[in-house]
Amino acid sequence: MFSQSPYVCRMEWGRRGAREAAERGDIIIIVDILSFSSTVVSALHFGAVIYPYPPYGNGKQYAKEVNAEYILGRAEAAKAGKPTLSPVSFNEEHSKKRYVLSSLNGAFCTWIASKAQALFIGSLLNAVAVASAANQLRLKTKANITVIPCGEQWSNGVEEEDTLRPAMEDYLGAGAILSYLEGEKSPEAEVCMGAFLQAEPKLDALIWDSGSSRELRERGFAADVEHCSRLNVYQSVPILKDNHFVLYNGKL
Image 1 (tube, one colour):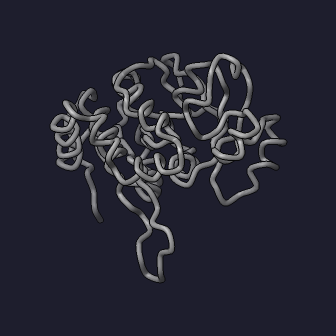
Image 2 (cartoon, one colour; image 1 turned 30 degrees about the vertical axis):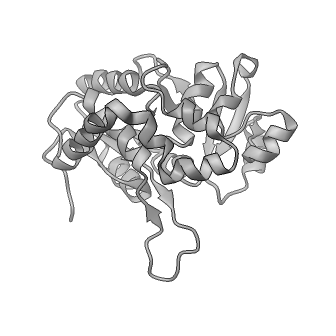
């Protein structure tokens, strides 16, 4: 079976990678730049409480069960003046308010890996902060670290096709975090980190022109792309506890 087991720091793609890492007992960092990870990091920066939920369940019913508000789609929520999957929709007004956030990639990967001993949310916005938290926790637990770029999903897939579309922005976000992680890195992690280091001088321009970015910009969400492309602007490190994200305080 495919394995990066000799190494402390690993890189795995998507839902399957998240499940495998959780089953191994690794410290997991979920990376979905446009936009789940960036939204969670931004929301917690402003004090909001986020419950992740997969896209195929009854999110509205789950929101009632946890006494939270279900986050609507970008366009619908924007018309109502409510926070959305768009990270720039969160501000100080949302402090201490509870929200259920679904997404096809980041929330789904989080749900699959929710039994991990430690699951962090990483983005370009908090790359150095989340890596520092994972480094500290690894020293305490001796667990390995797996960074999970979530990728996107191809639409209209046909039978026997893999629907995962590796996303450049998630790969670069994972590489940024890996560049700050301590410990021997697998070849997969080394190459991912190298991609980030090569791209760093023009990071925002590359993400701006990526396929995922073009899709968002065509829908009128250019501000999301600009926000999510910023490197190390937040110290917020979300960790999953009791099915919602809290700010990591050095303890499990």
